Length: 405
Image (cartoon, rainbow, N blue to C red; front, side):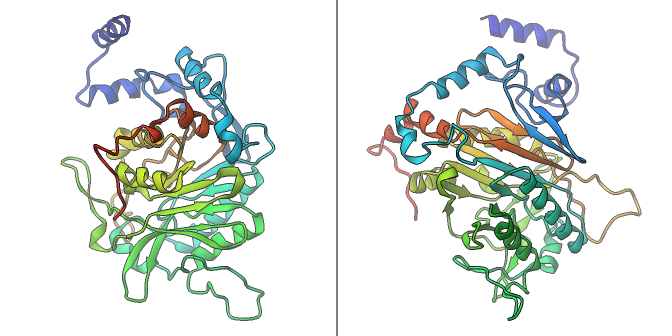
């Protein structure tokens, strides 16, 4: 075919490297996409998207993928498909999602994490304020943002977190109910003061029995805990020549599925943490039970798994569940020089916080440095996709079933 001929010609004229050929080809073509699209699809993608428009606000970048003259034919066709479907199904859940009358702006916060907890907390405050100034109504923080990502550090940085349904009220007179969790207090104050939904990334949580969890708090604009997710699948891996990490050395796994209602703008939002994204069953059960419009995964993929799987897994979950997928990562910090090591073993995050639409296209992303990714979600695309390709009603329950235990 013409495609295979072009591929053969490209490979024949490409310089081989010891690394994976697909990854090497991808790397050589990043310059054509731009730094802000470093995590984008390779040139072999069937429906590449447009390069994002970058608008600078102070020292940060405001990243949003917008159609432009270079928008590929395949991308135009795929976008036209979901946007030209009948809108009848979307009228009930998000009648105004596409006409600008409902705020569907999301912000993904990507910032560096240090060994100093107070510094991390100050950074989180600053980024939350900037997200508010950019008009976001739902904000996502990265995984383990108040602590180094090291199993030996989790106990030192852990906090006692409020339970599901907790309502934050503090008039400054009585004892502060969040005195034992200063990191969480930052999230509650921002949610209430800015009137936004916050998916609080994750921080180490310690319970009354001394168990430590990797926990995400989801907080409403009224300051209520509407979701509390303890990472279900612990990151225990050993990649030869890559990375070895065992969260189970310190952490205990959660045992609940997490979703919450984010109001008329977003509807149902499902939440996982990092390694949870590798398990399609979890996402599919969430969507089956709650009909999630968004799946959100704060995560900290590394320099081994990040280039290979970070964007791939997000696209897979978006297409599987015909919804938006949002991820927020810490910004990358480089390995310290010899003699400059900190107390804990250094972990290098991949970065590239990303938004994927129901068609599996990247509609917002960034590179490895500190950044805020801001995207206005076309929420009507979820219903149009599910109506046009109705896989939810085409399941063969007579042959297989996905059930919650």
